[in-house]
Image 1: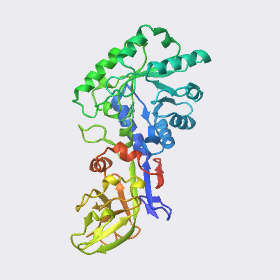
Image 2 (image 1 turned 30 degrees about the horizontal axis):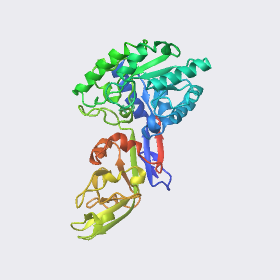
Image 3 (image 1 turned 135 degrees about the vertical axis):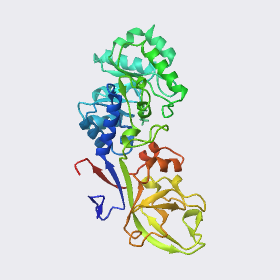
Image 4 (image 1 turned 90 degrees about the vertical axis):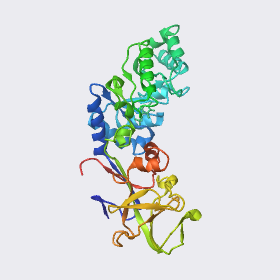
Length: 379
Ligand SMILES: *Cc1c(COP(=O)(O)O)cnc(C)c1O
């Protein structure tokens, strides 16, 4: 079985294609735009669902040397693949876990005075001044030091910051996807003022969306995630990134239904006249979200069959979806044919909009049930 030039085993019902050459091109595009700022790679959540080892390795080959993960386990995965990489853990320091970070040379993004004190104490006790990042909150109220915490660190607890090297001072933008949002400038100004009171270290503020803002936001290191994977980061401009993923699935069965016949769970779609319905081998368990179901009695989001755009009808179920393929030639809409559910023509962000979510969620939900094809650029 051949799909897009790839040999697919006959027992594969759905295929997730991951184009590492596109991923690398996306990283280079951002790295070029922000130069002389450095460009890291955010590979949390298993590389946004695409496979943390493959993603991190491809980025490292392209010249990326700094990675951000959310969890210790993800940090271990990057460390195992890339011994020389600099790896930051966004969770910060879990209580009692300092030795686990240090053993793998993982750098916590220290987010509170408690975390900083605990890391400093561990470094002092072990005589191992292991580097860490300091995360300052400037507008998310999620993770990071408050302005009052910075006062404490710049004042009474100043000594503590000499016990380990601060390799990065960072904050995170809440509204960078809207360039004109006033919170962007408020956060940037607050960040620079607070960072200035800490020991001098490289500064990082921009996520993907931040890399599309003015240079003043790029500082020393940018931290793109979603844009590397082809997702839309900024709502202000057409998405310039290359698509990286494609979810394809096979038609299991095609049937003609008569006018008045209900289709799928809860009978939410009734054929208004004679219709050809194709049942396709992917559902919400494969990451094709149930929120992508067709609205009651109307066609839903469009997917792609041999260049034809065809709608989902009825409810998305766990393992299958129904498409209305009326009018598509039978040699194309047939048992075994491949349908592009998410990909270059069935855009990730368009589908996410349809589902009332964002590309991030769609990507990170892509299941483990699909046969994976990783294109490394050599094909
Ligand atoms: C996830 C994350 C990023 C990357 O965000 P994108 O919007 O995917 O570019 C950067 N910084 C922090 C702190 C994050 O949590």
